[in-house]
Amino acid sequence: MPIPQEGRPLVMVQRGEERTRPNHGEIVFSLAYEARGLLPPFSPFFLDILEAFELQMLQLTPCATMTLGIFVHFCKMFVGVRPSVDLFRHYFIVKYAMLRDRPLVGCIRIVPRRAH
Figure 1 (spheres, rainbow, N blue to C red):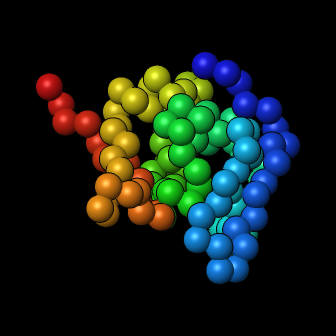
Figure 2 (figure 1 turned 60 degrees about the horizontal axis):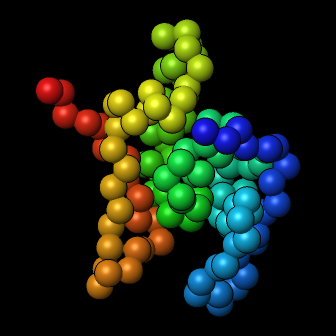
């Protein structure tokens, strides 16, 4: 798993833009995130999740973003381990919502895996 570099370039979403086309390694960022306090630099774990699942921030629902934050907090404060994509995949599934075979903005949900 590649380790993300801090200081990745941000691609701002322009008013009226229907589709962003970020280059490899760029993160799509909206001012709505800034208004709510989600500001760069992002944690290496957050960037690893985006890279591992080939996601952009705009695809995450607010609940999915909160789930990632809670997962990191739980790992560090209660279990004493560094959060990792492999550990995250053990407990959670990333689900995509589609409309007519096209992904929706804010379409990524994170749901717990069922116990076996």
